[in-house]
Image (cartoon, rainbow, N blue to C red; front, side, top):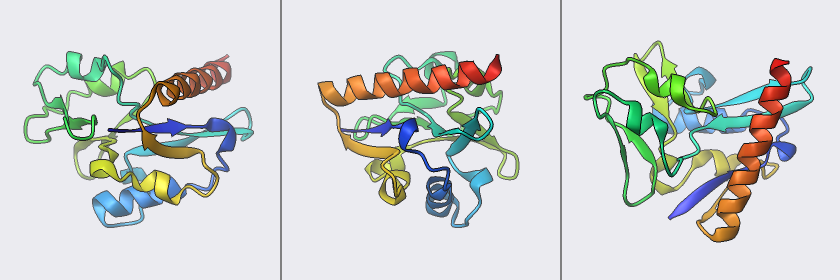
Length: 159
């Protein structure tokens, strides 16, 4: 089972990840329909891809009143069953990383599904800001450190 590792310090703000994601899922180049978003803070000096971090204890799964979010046992991704989803957006509100989105045009929740085990964002990232690798103790620690960095950047931008 693989994991995405985000390295904010490597992000060049190119948005290739958003384009690859929207093309894979929606068959169009439209960053607004991607399952991730490149955020920029501190007067455009820090950028990072923000997406579902596939939390072990996923608050989005716990809070969903319709039970529309479940774990894909093959990939470990938290998936949204759109036919069960009532579009309440509680999963968006509870995500500590801002990694869930609402597609106004498609009227659905957008959440990283790891592209069925072949994340397109990682395959096109030219700088190594998004890497997909096998889950290991080292990778889990890297994910935790990356999440902490991202949270610190985001918190600093709010002050």
